[in-house]
Amino acid sequence: MRHRRSPARALDPEDESHREWAVLSAEAPQLAATMRRYLVQLTTFLAPRSVDVADSTLRQLARWLVAETDVAVVSDITRTHVEDYKVWLAAQPGCTGPAWPRTPSVSGCG
Image 1 (tube, rainbow, N blue to C red):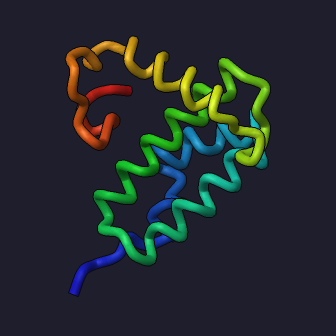
Image 2 (tube, one colour):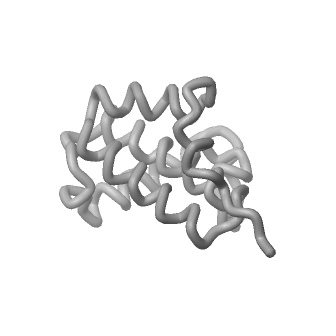
């Protein structure tokens, strides 16, 4: 039997993720709430490490959206935003070379 990440762990106030989501929630409440709800859903069928990777990746995307766009809700994300994010991501330290791993945050891309 595979162990599931406890939703309570995702809300642990001592957790770096929780602290960062609190900041993002203050800056873009609906965006952060939607992404966090999605992460809670992931805990029902993904391994804990996979949820951690998704959490890190979504926080990175949310930080970029807040800093570089006027997006306040997930439904406002367009293809142009995704393309611009990919260009930004490729320019980050550790993200060089022709082939990236499937999980950028694990590879150091972000």
